[in-house]
Length: 229
Image (tube, rainbow, N blue to C red):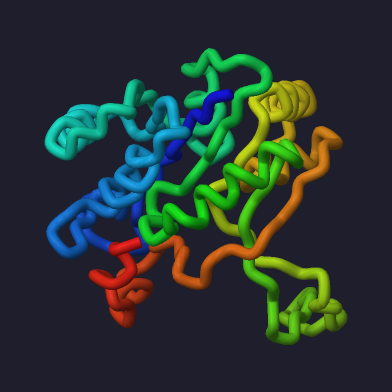
């Protein structure tokens, strides 16, 4: 039983600002994606890592991988126009057994803890598809035309989804195949697996496992403390 990691890193980082995509922005002296890769590279259960990014950043990533001795990064592939396409391109580079597992994690979620990754790995062995998330505590509204509220949505069963998302390889592969046949594009991997008719379990994630989108996302955080885990 092996675990393979796909890191979609093709975002342009427009909302973050700056000349480089946000995954290459340095915080505390190191690129955001380097912190992300470090977590998975350190896990014995991880066999290899594939990164999907824009072709013009291949050399930059190769240099980063070499400088940090990320020996488990075996492939860098060209990302697609969407996250869906980037993950699919990464998946095509792998050749696991059907009972191996795929882990998909956002390049710009560097604060995921190794403890939580291990918890997800343990969980997926029993349920075959698992993702982390956070329960919604605030009142949630559905809004229609002209920003007029249509209704209040019961929040008891609502979650905000995070990554890493873990799936048995044959399930994820078949889900992408069905999505391709029907021209369905998922916003995350669990939506594709759900579309294909498989059950996905959700477990409690981490509040600190944020997706860095803008510069404001990290201004109020204790970066050094978060990166210890």
